[in-house]
Structure formats: C-alpha cells, structure tokens
Length: 347
Image (cartoon, rainbow, N blue to C red; front, side, top):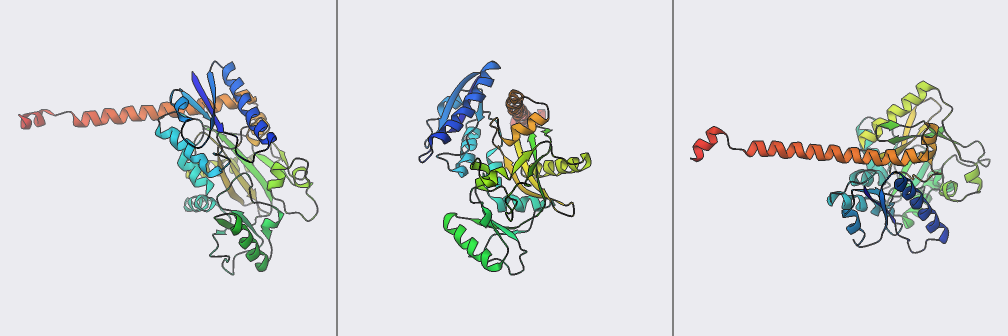
C-alpha cells in the first residue's frame, strides 16, 4: 500500500528541538508502517499545494499535520484538501476540527445535545455578565495545546476578570470565559469504535496555592514546577461504574461533534460527583510519549498496535464511504432508468 505521512513543515521561529521532536515522531510512525508492508513517503506541508501531488498518488495519508507554519487553525484545511481530493486519510474530518478548535462553538453544540458543559461566555468587549460565577478561567477561544493558559488565567474577582480578558484580547482574536470547575481531571481516548482506559492528571505535587490546571508550562516546559506537579496516571484510580459513566459521556460528546478516527475527551468531576466536559480534541498527539499512547498501553496495546489501529480505522471509514457512494450511484441509476410506461410515453 502506498502511504504518505503529512506533517507541518518547519515553521519560522521553531527551535532545533521543536523540529527534532516532529521528525522523530514522523520517523517512528514511518518505521512502523514500513514494517507492516507499506511503501511510505514523508511529505512536509507548507503554504501552497505542492504537498498535495504525492498525496493524490497515495492509497492512504497518515495525517500528522497539526497546522501549517505552526498555525493550528490551518489543520482543518489540510484535512479538507485531502477530503476534496478524494484521498483517504487518518483522523477526523475537517468540519470536526473546525468545530472543536473554536471552544464556544463546540460548547454550544455539546449543550444543545444535553451534555454537561461548565457555564461559559464570549466577552462583550472586555466585560461579562455581572452574575457570572467565580472563579473563572479565561482562555483563547481558538487555540489548542494549552496555548495562552497559565496560572493567571484563573481569576477570583471581577477586576481580575476584566484585566485578564483585556490582556488576552491583545494576543488572541477570540477569548472565552468559563466557570472554573474544581475537582479531578480525567480523559477518555477513542480510536475507531474503541474507548481506551480512563486517564487522570495527578495534581498532588503542584506548588502550594497553584491552580490545578494543565497550563502551557505544564505541557511544554519539562522539569518546571507545573510539569512536575501535573503527572498523568493511567488507568485512573476510579471505580468501574465511574469509568463506564465517563466513557459513555465521552462517546456522547464525540458523536455530538461528529467525531471519527481518533480523539480525546477531557473532563472534570466536581466535589458532588458531577462530570463536566472541558474539551473534545480530534487528532490528539499520537507521539509515543503522549497521552493517547499511554492510554493504549494501559489497554494492553503496543505503540505499533495503536498506529496500525488508527490506520485500519481510516481504511474502514474509506471503505464505508465508498460503499455508500456506490449504493447512492446505483439508486440514482435505477431512478433514471426508463420504466415501460415512460418508454411508451417517450415513443
């Protein structure tokens, strides 16, 4: 099988370490696919469409592209271009990425399906309704990977809320304010139809007085206080009924946004035991040391199993889409075929 791996070409401003990490992950996936019998070509995605030609000659694209020139909102354009070209690819469809990258849109859709989402609002100017509950967290509305999230993102006073919104609005086009939910932070991974073991972030080693959040520093500053203080545990130490409830809720959220391929749903359980959906993440990081791989390991999968299951899910989706298209074409042909009565009228 001819397989292409797409990934973000080196963006201006990336460090040598950033580039190394991307290429290391791409190389690892390429090795797994070659060992499984694929003919593999690695294709960096850069502005323009030169990258599309080798993709159109492929049987499948393993889409590891998280943006173009490190702009995350362009991620959906890559998937959309592949879809328009009729090339099967791994991961979510472009509309799912677009929905989930705009947190307020995803929240509105989840709420419309009756799913529990913490109260949120898009500020009018730099203000929110006076009765909005505190503490609140102020985040970019259209970023991922914890961009723009730091300890100062959580505010406990009206003045701090206004100030934080003003500061964030200088750096980001859209800002969302959401009720801060105290409690345990958990996640459910989904690959095809399979839900993976629930994972939890252990905040017990966070610095005294720090908010228990996965900030940008916690994710991307190894060895920092917030990194050390926010360690993943998988499987989470929860009862089976609690885990089943979270998995069911994650599946409902994934279906609500039209999810396919693979994804992760982040949740919190408050002090009353009520679960809340924080985010739905299509195409989360599938590096060998990332959360989805950790969940797969807890399910008894090797890293190779995870990659091949993602590939097989994409091929199955492509096969279903092809079958549906063939059925639709057959129905259209039958509808257009002249009946005896119509043939008589035409005569």
